[in-house]
Image 1: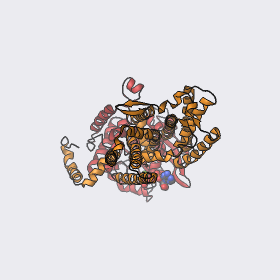
Image 2: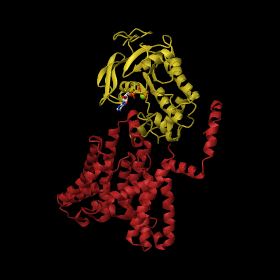
Image 3: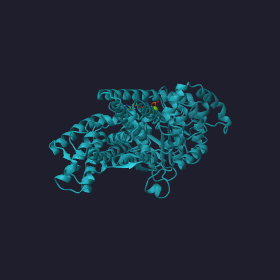
Length: 346
Length: 268
Ligand SMILES: Nc1ncnc2c1ncn2[C@@H]1O[C@H](COP(=O)(O)OP(=O)(O)OP(=O)(O)O)[C@@H](O)[C@H]1O
Ligand SMILES: [Mg+2]
């Protein structure tokens, strides 16, 4: 802050500047982390990539890197939707169930009704929007806490999926090729990249753009930050919340398509538990569960960290249990870090 | 209970100059069993600073919340330029040109100063970037924010890109006051704007209130600080137990008399 232009205020500012300088290095680090929420996950990702690379040469193999990105794609897409909701100080437990429901509808209409892929994808979008819209209405109209509302719809969507599909898996080979197109790969600098990964990245770019460059994005942060202040500032809080759940629903439809490609099938039993993985990615990515703070880029880093940890630990020959343990520890550390960082705010 | 209106004749609808800019009649607001407002009248005239004083819980904040759409009164009517208005939400009042600084500052802590100044009325980029892609003109808003702060003489906010949560209480207050002053075209309402401020900053806010009045924007200001009130106000609305006890002026009454009316020790 420059004080040279205003002599009158210079004297009033000097003690403050002196005080700022007297912050301990730790406090200063906290200030930086507070201003750039994606910084701590970025550091963790770099360290974990280096460490796992040392532990096992195969970690760096192009095939392995390709595998990590493909493993991350679906959860990474769910996590974009989850980030939007969590930024408003909400949470969406139904992301996995919504995705599975949308993927079953998409897959089944192509096989049983012979629908074209375009129609199937549009229907999936409608399912995603309807599911997100119901969540949004429960939160804005019935004023249910998002945790409870989406815990309810998680079970509702799950039941509808099982009723609708009769528990049967639709194999990728039975669907038109476009439905599993998201699972196809192409080489980039020797690494095979799947179409799904590209679509996931597109979702990140789009949402990051909208959040940082549009008034809607600003309002999402404002609503999560302090709902009453947002309302008094003339923001229509309910409209913002509803639009967030709808946007999340649309992204979940995309995730459904990626899931069909990744699994080369649509199964009513796979992916429901990804809601927790998506929350994990968001939290590790530095987005605050209290809302108003975080970025989707942090979430992408968070999803990658989880993917790298799981992959690296399994390459190191450790049991799946240790992967789960490591992810659990990461979540606790990330949330503790967030609590500490938030103390910057008086 | 008598009501004195020492300066101006009560405005009559139809008259242009004497019609109050903002008028409330018989406002009632209850919270469950708590009576916040018990039939309050208020007139704000052109070019004046109207102070509202009263003990804690007298209903000052509730009154201005009803006037600015943050609360909907149970009964009574509100007239803007003599015409009845029914604000359902703060946005309605803002659209009508009434800007408010609430006692609980309505700022978004994680957003920067410029974003807070323009919160809820972001400016888009020109051309298709703005109309199609809906990109906000961040650089333009920051520039205008700097300009507004300079024009309003607010020197405590030097960097408009700092998140508001990193500011001191007084600086946050300055953000909220600046926003109201910059956008209030018809009426500006300030609920205890100097409560968190030091002597110099308080002086700046009072100066700002005068600037607004001289620009032709009438101001309603709530304050517990009697010297401030008597310094700045043209008229003083004394609120007591959810009602208007009196309307006085700094000339017609002394501070001691005002406090006596406020506490019920004296009749107006
Ligand atoms: N949201 C609310 N819920 C319940 N009661 C309320 C609410 N807001 C105000 N009240 C009550 O209404 C009455 C008037 O409150 P108000 O905030 O208007 O007082 P005030 O004059 O602004 O006081 P202060 O000087 O402390 O700011 C008080 O009795 C208060 O407890
Ligand atoms: Mg008050």
